[in-house]
Image (tube, rainbow, N blue to C red; front, side):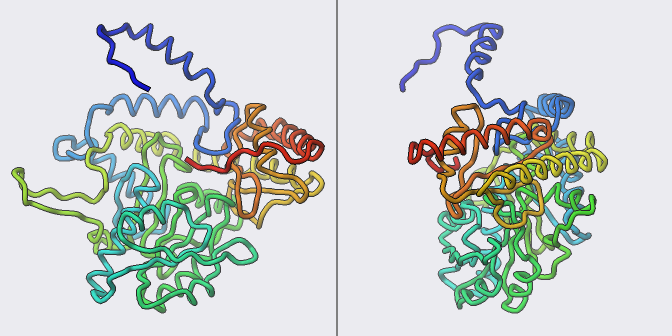
Length: 413
């Protein structure tokens, strides 16, 4: 596609109309037609996010000395996240653009830590379960590291025994998920932490999906295993604000057990004409609006707001999970603790079902191992649970009747 810049500028009213027309074919996330990508609670919070982001849209989080307001909001957001993750006065954090950057920064820090602690390791590797997010492999690829993935256990969670067996002389880090993206299952972080402690390894917990809201699910009296800094051996935790923190994109955090651990994430150099450059993030410029919107979201919601979101999300999860499990032949994979889960069935191609759902306006994320459909529940899904279940039952019946057909290509991008 080639396109030239318009010779003359256009009026905003005209542009807005064209942009509204463009989005008319987008996913209907306001009415729960999404299985991922969007974290929407209600119009009130969305209004707060838009206003806060717009107020600080021009400010640059790279220059906190120039924008002390952004600096204050960032510090307060990170302090609140640390409190949710059982941090203490030694915990140190970084505001990032998303889970991928948070995981990258964690692995960079682990590599630099290993270079200092174990200089003899020249090909550092990370041991993780097969269920670990692709961002880990992406980070390792960019950093010259290697990921050794081991099969999950029969419960689809990381197998701490298998992970320990995979530890070798070049292993510098372990990786656990809380929860795994595909199936919504929290790995046995305490057991993996014990492995990390025995071998002197860095342990990163990917809590990008669950880190912010999981404490409130636990507060509802639901069983949520320990996964944060309360677990000995955990070195770093990634937790996305624009996922279960319900903030605006792009916003995530990478949290380190101590300031010393965080310093390994710092990149500094001064061999250029403008003095010392020092940064804890991969990106340079950081949108001030994202920091402001995250601060506004946490202040606007408060503990009671997050409790309401957690309760609504879990009610939605319960309704949809129970409903699909009631369909003959369907089962939910494992026993997910939070609002995300996946399900499948014998004798029907679930990717074909996902494709049929797509034709009806539902976005279903397919899983490949085990083969199924992924669901990420938010408060808006509570009101459409019955509609979703009816559509799933209809599409499964159609897939069984039609036999083999076009399946949606499993992709996540």
